Each structure stands twice: as C-alpha cells, then as structure tokens.
Image (cartoon, rainbow, N blue to C red; front, top):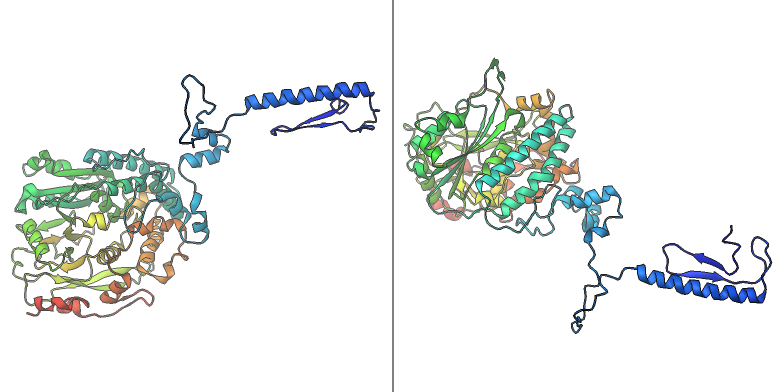
Length: 577
C-alpha cells in the first residue's frame, strides 16, 4: 500500500529485465492529489537514478551465455579474463522435479522416440532399453541403456571369464532378492519384476557382451554346453564325455549347475543336498586333470533361482570362449567312442556353409556301439499342442529310423532338438539366446529352428547316433516345482503361457500379433533376438508344413524320404542312393 503511494510509481517485475515508471497526472488510486511541479521533477530524477542503478545490478548478476562457438579469427589476449564461463551440465536438470531427474539418471526417458511410440512402431520398453545406434540386424552398443548399464569406456577386447562370471553371479543375487520380494505376486507381477530386472541389468550387459564376443578359433576345439537341474547323472555325463572323446584336450565344458543346497531338499523324500556335479567330477581321478587345465567352467545357481532350461542354456552360452564348434546337451547323456571327431566329420561333410546337426537321440540304455552301422533316427514330425496349458505351441514329435541305407552325407531335417545339437560356433553370434524368455519348458525348439533357418543355417540329422538320452525321469525334481516353491503353487502354467506370446509373435501366430500382445513388455527388444535376414519365415513354415493361422500341419514327405527340401534340388544326387 505504501508503494502505491510513492509519486512516480515504480513497478519492478521479478524475473524480468525491465522496469516501468508511471508518472501520470491526476489522483492515484487511493485519492491522493498530485504533488507540486518541483516535487515532480525531483521524483522524476530519483526514478531515473533508480533505473540506472537497477540496470547496472542486473548487468552484473546476469551470467554470460556459455558460447562455445568462437570465430576462427578470435584471439585470446593473455592476462585478460574471459567473459565466458563453463556451465556444469548438471545445472540444466537441477531445477527439474526429483522424479524427472531420477529418470534421466537412469536413462528411462523415451525422448526422441515419442512419435514412434504413438505410431505403434515401437513399445515404450523398446524406446527405453534399446540403443539408438542399433542398425539392421546387427548388434549395437548398449551404452546408456537402462539404469544398470555399466560405465562404458568403449572397450573392444572380449570379456574375460572372470568378468562374465562376476556379472552373472551379481545378477543372480539380484534375481534372488527380487524373487523373495515378489513371493506372493501374480504371474503378471512375476513377469513384470523379471522384465524390469533384465531390462535394467542383464539386457544392457548382454548387448555389451555380444559387441565384444571373441573371434572363432580354428583349432578343432569344441565347447560343450551342459545344463543341469538337480541331476544325479550329471557327473557321469561329464566323465563319459571326456572318456569317450578322441581329443579330450580340445573339449571345454560350460556347466550351469542348478542345485538344492539345503539340508532337507524336496525330492520325493526329504534328503540331503543335491550331489555337487562339479566338485564330484573335479575331485575324481577322471576329472582332476581337466579341471586343473580350466576345461570346466562353472556357473552355480540355487534351485530357487532357476528360470527353466532355455535360460540355463542362455547362461551357458556366455561361458563360450571362442571354441571352434558349439554343442549343447542335457546333463543326463551317454556318448559313443570318438563322438567329438565324428561330430566334426559330419559337420564338414554336410553340404552347407552353416550346418547344424541335431535329432532326438535314442535312449541312454541303447548300445551306441552296436548302432554304428545303422542310420540315425531323424526328427521329421511336429504337432500343434492341444492341451489348454500349452497355448497351441508347436511341439516336436515323430522321430523315426526312416533310412534303410546309412550314408556318409548327413540328410536334411526340418527341426533342431534343444537337448542335442552341434554347430559352427558362430551360431552364438548370429542367433544369440534371448534373455527375455524365462520360465519356459515349451517353445524353444521351434523358435530356434526358425531363427537358425532364417539366419542361413541348414539343419541336418546325424548319420549315426553319437549320444544317448535319459528320457524317463519320473521321480526326479522338475524346474516348475522350484518355480512353485519360489512363488506360489500353480503359478508356472499361466506364467509360461504369458511368456509364450513372445515366441508366438515371432512365429506369426495371428492371436499373438504385435497389437494383440499384452503387456507390451513381452516384446521388449524382440527384434534383436528374432528371425534372421537371410531367408524368410514364410518360406521356412511352408517348407516344414506349418500353418500358424489354421494350426495345421501338412505332410511334406521330403524329410521322411531323406531328400533335400524344396529349393535344394541341386543336391538330390547326394541322396539318390
């Protein structure tokens, strides 16, 4: 009120650079009469002085712009102070709300991808977690993806085994803590917690790992991926693999061991801890030498941390150190004498630059030595599952000894079996395992078959059976029982059906089209772990006789008769006999 009474009313506006002086004649708002002319002149001069003083103050306190664009001809005179100061980049965000500052620090801002999200071209999760410099089918840098992205210094050397194990063990600890926190969550809540944990830690690391993968060696070495879930046959599998190998010094095993370590483990009856496959092998006369030479690489997991066989194989694939050939098996297998040399021989005789050899092996009770002159069974059949809990996923069945004549050239096959395959180890680079596929027991084989074929790999059946597989495990623990113990009983089936949508979307199931899948987090970064670009998915499905829309299987005959598939007729002469 006193300010209003001042003659020559001054109006200062906070946050602005102007000042207004009003010297209108007549009564003011409060009814005061105008002053005398001499008084008015004095007030006018005082107002001008105040204006000059305030202008000087504003000039002194206003920061100079951080101009980083200097003229090429500009000279800096020594001894003179520059009017430009460096501004801490953090000053730009200090006035933002704390929530926004936190999201910026965690790289959780959609940013320039907002329009793509609105247009449905990508999900929010993809915009957050995917690096901007990923191009085509290649794998880009994972810098600044997610809150858990490690500090990057543009390393290019391959990660060491110790680095890999340190990170994976750290991730498993976080997974265990998350599981405890979400003990009573619904299947949607379990997926959401897993997805966020992977998006924050494992996915950024995985992209960095893929960028720094070691080069493939040419020394005849074989990397054998072995995943074990509370399996007492595991140690015998390791012993048999080395004992029957022709070149055991060229064999390197990546073992993912998932065990119950409690005093009383649920295994039909309450018994003690599970047999420690790694320690039993390394302490045996058969295994000491190989463990000492570093030929067994171990990732140990608690039973409560189990994510299913597919994710166990994901972890095992990260223990590969550049070996020339890649082979994956289950932990309850037997081997034919010289299986390693015979495997490489088959791969080299297959009429393909990228061969994969796989089938459903005979039972472990079979005498593989007696079957050496008999053509191996071939996996030709597939069906759409009809059980309500299997979500109409394609299941592989129909393995049979189709051939009367054993050839030295491997015959083509439409599918791979996850429990036994061997391939060129660049498969791990070209068709990397997907970290967003937990809790699965179904679907991995048809997805891997399609991804391999579209990436230019040709699938073959072995000419002879090199391994046997233990199929009857009725009294043995199952990983879905561990899921029920970690969370709540019965949660695995709906959880698996939810995650299967990620696989079905890639395979072209109409009910799992991108706009139909919910939540959208199921499709995070799916393009990085999906079909290849060498051949089309449509051609593959046609060749193997699968119709995803009608859920129909068409008999194609080429597999059963032992001839090459359509498009490979130029190789018919290799199989006419």
